[in-house]
Amino acid sequence: MAAYSEHSLHIIHCDLDAFYAAVEQHDEPALRGKPVIVGGSADSRGVVSTCSYEARKFGVRSAMPIAQARRLCPQGIFLPVRMKRYLEVSQQVFGILSTYSPLMEPLSIDEAFLDVSGTEKLFGAPVEIGKKIKYRVKTELGVTISVGISYNKFLAKLASELDKPDGLFVIPHDKALKILYPLPVTRLWGVGEKARQDLEQLGLKKIGDIQDLPEGWLSARLGSSGQHYWELARGIDRRSVEINEKRKSLGRETTFAEDIDDIPVLKSTLALFSAELCRKLRRDKLYCSTVTLKLRYNSFKTVTRSRTIAPSHADMVIGQVADELLYKSYTGNHPIRLIGLSLGRLLPVPDWEQGGLFEEAYKYEEIDRIMDQIRQRFGSRVIQRGNQLNT
Ligand code: TTP
Ligand code: MG
Figure (tube, rainbow, N blue to C red):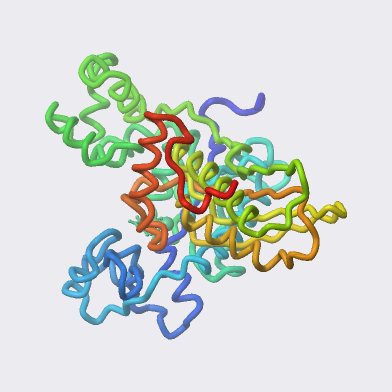
């Protein structure tokens, strides 16, 4: 935007506080102020998804085994994951955020970037927008959200982290280097355990250690990621907020050569579509959280039916939902001309997700991964599931 300089504060990052636990505390007032720990169900692999800030005082953290959380916080209230409900709240939050700018980029189930350059005349300065968002999320949805504001994505994201919970924090250009200086290198967006070790081997522990290096020193040792870390350490991030239309949904449909009323054939077609679409999701590291079936009868009447699911990209999970939608929609009375399947509300697979947070999908993930590898080596038709064989 012409009126905006490189360092104007136009990026807002929003991240809900203790998201799943906050929803539980909202829905059940007796849980408020208590150490609430949300983990898998009884038969889960037993890790903490998240916990309320009351439980964090005891040292409980995301991804910690439930057994360890129990030892640290025996008085904790342990609850199963209610993914459907969190998705509903997530959608409502994104709904509120998108009223402040058409340029909204969801990053995970509970965080998003907004680029508000250009909406200032309508809604006020970025800080005012931040305050409005916080107020509306709190009053309309009963949970708190932390807001970070800066002149680029990395610093806006960092700003929201630095003032949690219920924060509103601004990182202006003239303060960025100073704020970054004492922080550990893991605060750089994208620096995980492996990169932390690489940096430590070079004697770099805090962001300031990287700031002090001449440009070129780190890239000579770590290649392009070295350059990237050096830029972040100096508050430079050129990535823009992307709506990314192609992330919104993914679909596949076919018109049959002859009208079909044979349910096994319809089922196999859907199984084939699920497999194809899920493979694309896995390739792009995305989950979907809605599944929509479309049927067109030989009378040209068209029906669609959708379902919201826990985020998944497992063939078996999506295929099963597609089957259920088919059973609900199709009476078998009229032959089908066209069938389609589309997967919507796509979410990036979060960094911390290792092998499947969302329980149902987990069992199938390994099988899908192996099938993807085989198809990549030997061609896409070389291996299929039994349920695709009628097509
Ligand atoms: P986060 O935003 O990382 O965590 P949070 O919202 O619970 O807490 P914070 O106030 O620090 O932002 O993740 C959002 C949700 O994603 C979280 O509520 C539960 C889920 N999640 C997991 O299931 N496993 C994990 O390891 C993490 C980090 C998050
Ligand atoms: Mg959060």
